Amino acid sequence: MSRVAGQARVPVLTIDGPSGSGKGTIARQVADRLGWHLLDSGALYRLVAVDAERKAVALDDDEGLARLAAHLDVEFAISADGSEQILLEGSDVTGAVRSEEAGIGASGVAVIPAVREALLGRQRAFRQAPGLVADGRDMGTQVFADADLKVFLTASADERAKRRYKQLKDKGIDVSLAAVSRDIVDRDRRDSERSVAPLKPAEDARILDSSGKPIEEVTQTVLDWVSNI
Image 1: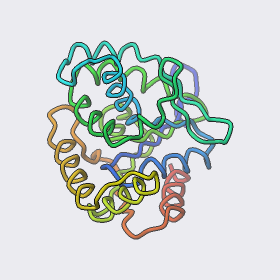
Image 2 (image 1 turned 90 degrees about the vertical axis):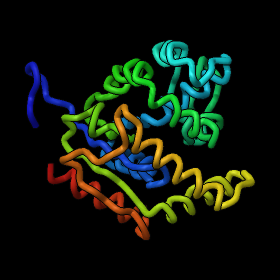
Image 3 (image 1 turned 60 degrees about the vertical axis):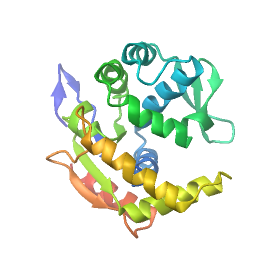
């Protein structure tokens, strides 16, 4: 392990990929197995969208959104039953953050340079010993360009739509597979065509297609790669 300013450098694993690729699930499992910290960068952008709705800030108000991003009072915690809990100004907003509306809003605010700049330092602050697993869309290309291992996780659009459809149905949300498929395609286009930090693999990323593969197999592949860095 290299050293910086006399201290051991904290290793970072980035897992980027499109919506529904499974990067959040894989990142959580890998972080848990390694005993490393976890950064769900997408949640921060979703939180900006949720906070904007709560405070009546328009999603085309770049300056207002940047102010919200710079002053988010957020806490990521684990509830008594072991599930993830996201607190915004002390209120549990986990459900709102994981909603389709927040996801669509996040895709919109993520293209605003001032918002990305406001969140950059907060994301990098997650880099703490013994290591960090960071998942998102630009973790390996922008936020942690010096990461020890960069993974770009993908899957077919059809499979990603079916996964998302099942997640929503399991939550009791009435939605059609066709609508979810359209949303996946639209979100892919927005994320890959945006002018600021577009979704793409880092030049030194390892591409991993999770189509048709069980979670444990994908997780083990990433862990095997980590063991060789």
